[in-house]
Amino acid sequence: MAKTRQLRVRIKAVANIRRITKTMQMIANSKFAKAQTTARATKPYTETLFEVLSELAAGLGDISHPLLDTGKKGDRTGKPVTLVLTADRGMCGAYNSSVLRLAMEAFKEDPSLKAGEIEVVGKKGQNFFKYAGITQSKQHNQFGDKPTYDNVRALAEAYIERFLKGEISSVRVVYMKFLSAGRQVPTVMQLLPFQAAVVEAGKGEAKAAKVYEFSPGAKELLDDILPAGVKAVLFQAFNDAVVSEHVARMVAMKAATDNAGKAGKRYTLVYNRARQAQITTELTEIISGAAALA
Image (cartoon, rainbow, N blue to C red; front, side, top):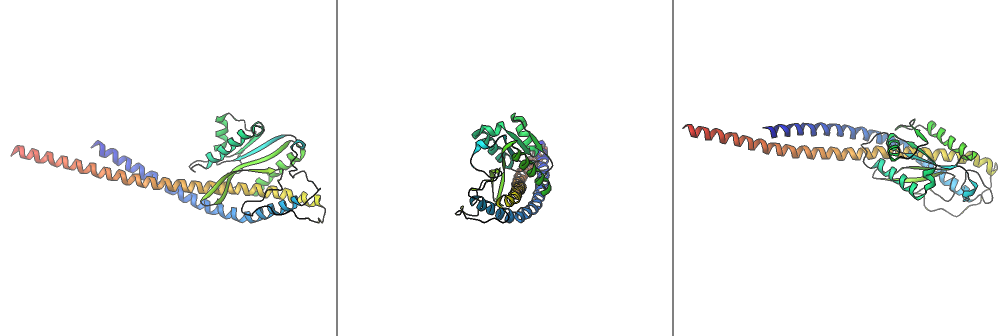
């Protein structure tokens, strides 16, 4: 009797878990659809602007700009900044651990990044670095799972201002790059200084350098285009991180729902067998008792 009672409790608990995970899966599915729409809407503009900037920077010749990567690290002062984008919540599979593992590998490969400024978005990343004993220069809690362009623009403008003043030497972003619903890749992207040789994935290899005539002048034009490009690329990174988080949670909750359903069926089968054995034992005892009285 005790065994069947325990099985009934387990069956009920598994059913409750399945209802919860199913609900979380539906919520993540809805959020994923909205986040994917936003990410797809901004991606063509970001990729086109990024490609144009790459071609312009490659065709500048002797013209230079402080936001461009000239390859001379000695010209830049200040500490490097590493921005790590994680989630505020768990239940999203290996999403957070993949991003944090890549960040730790980057710190190991380049110790100057760990000695520099580390800024973290998301409570999961903040708690990880806290328990790992890694100092965080700043924690960003204003973004959540719906980052607005105004907040991202303010962050990008602060980076640009500090970079131009020489307070920081570079800015790298560690985040989950969204490629499709079935593929997300943890990525380290250099935001500042802008690298002319880099072309967004999916656009093909870098083409031969073109010669441009600037009107107005190259510096005036780049003063407007380069900051806009930095803001757009950073905003795209935030959008990719959010949509990757939602799809990871959706997949994780679907797997949890399926596992709970299988566990419920397994416990139900065991319960039915135990109940049948209990009934058989009770009938045997009744028949044996009746035969003894006869």
